[in-house]
Amino acid sequence: MHLKKRVLVTGGSGFVGSHLCDRLLADGHDVLCVDNFFTGSKRNIVHLKDHPYFEVLRHDVTFPLYVQVDRIYNLACPASPIHYQNDPVQTTKVNVHGSINMLGLARRVNARILQASTSEIYGDPEVHPQTEDYWGNVNCVGPRSCYDEGKRCAETLFFDYHREHGLQIKVARIFNTYGPRMHVNDGRVVSNFVIQALKNQPITVYGDGSQTRSFCYVDDLVEGLVRLMESPAEITGPMNLGNPREFTILELAEKVIDLTGSRSPIRHEPLPVDDPRQRRPDIGLAESTLGWKPKISLEEGIKKTVEYFERLLGEDGC
Ligand code: NAD
Ligand code: UDP
Image (tube, rainbow, N blue to C red; front, side, top):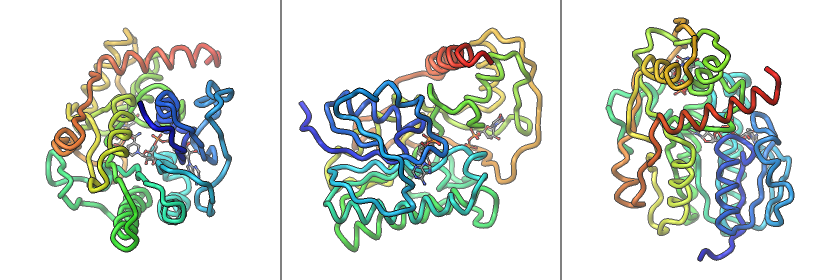
């Protein structure tokens, strides 16, 4: 039995945030979702609108906020390369100013705060799989830098607030996560491939498709985030959360075609600048400290994602 807590989720109407709100409400908490709806959608949270312990506030976290809460999950930030590169200055701002505002709030109300950091901290990694003690290989002047350096600076801020003010922090380094409620125009690889396959359109593999990623289903990630938040105070992270099964992008394309029975051909397109060659989390730390590891296979997760997009595309008449 959990004690009811007042929990703020920034970016709560986004893909991960909306699943996290569901989970926190199911656990009996009082949830405040703060979002400016840049990439989030009311569709993701509409089913919660009559829940007595759910509230939504339209707010941009780059501006200060004062609310009395016990926990803050700081997820506000566009996560897809297309979206975060659309307004790169705002991306850096949401990570730096947004984090300062949320850290200031946590300090003022004595809340515990979790940062949704990212595997992009490691850039195009020279260490494989990536462990938390690897410092990364990040270009600071490329098109991905607003996100990568923004998230790196956010981690710095979290640890400085912890050292300087004794704030209780948790830093999760999230690896590629997918599932229902990704935006139709999100542009990330799993949703792109599933939508293309369902429409029998060409599957756009960037480059030769030999680059790798490791895909975590959203429910597994949410479980890891909640466990990290509620872990003993001395556990701060940074902690990798992701699925250690690694696939090439070409393998992913073939799997999606197979699971949807699609007639889509594969079309190769240019590889984006600074696209990491390989990525796979070492999750030893999460396993030993949180007793956490992902349970949902890529096949199972893709099937759930396909069901979601089938329904969505049917509703929208696309
Ligand atoms: P998303 O784009 O679906 O969600 C981000 C949410 O933040 C959206 O609801 C958006 O409207 C909101 N937002 C953006 N700017 C804001 C602002 N200034 N003020 C208030 N709200 C704002 O992305 P997601 O996949 O759900 O990612 C959630 C978090 O997890 C992000 O911080 C992301 O960096 C991190 N993350 C996600 C992944 C992944 O694979 N999904 C991987 C690594 C890290
Ligand atoms: N990718 C692809 N086709 C797409 C979208 C992405 O081949 O339609 C590739 C992309 O180049 C990268 C990988 O898939 O190598 C993962 O891309 P995504 O944008 O999902 O996340 P990233 O891990 O790069 O942030």
